[in-house]
Image (cartoon, rainbow, N blue to C red; front, top):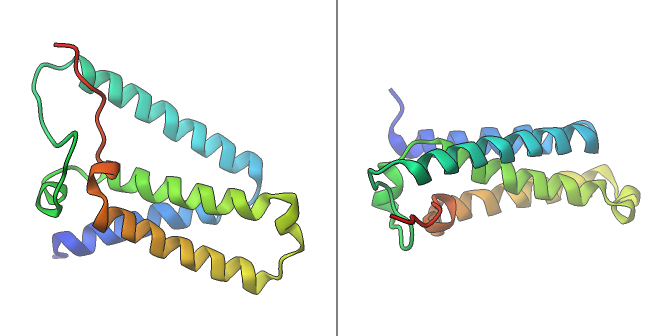
Length: 130
């Protein structure tokens, strides 16, 4: 069975790869809007529940391992969507395929660094009223 760190890295990289391999800007936009809708619904559901959980301000790596993998997948997808959107820009159309691949690989390092070094950004929750 895979250990937790391997699962976290795999979820981040797979969701990143899904976003980076989008064939068109319309497909990327639809996938990003679906992710935003799912995040909004999940955030509203957590906002209305009475049980506090997770971390909202300052997370450590130990707190990150206790949470579900969905926020990690979301962080990987958003990073991949940003990298892919940059490659869709008109100025980037003239780039060689090698430059696009290098930028996508550099973005995967950013996605992993985000998950490892900034877990409070990965697992952000809305503030509660109650």
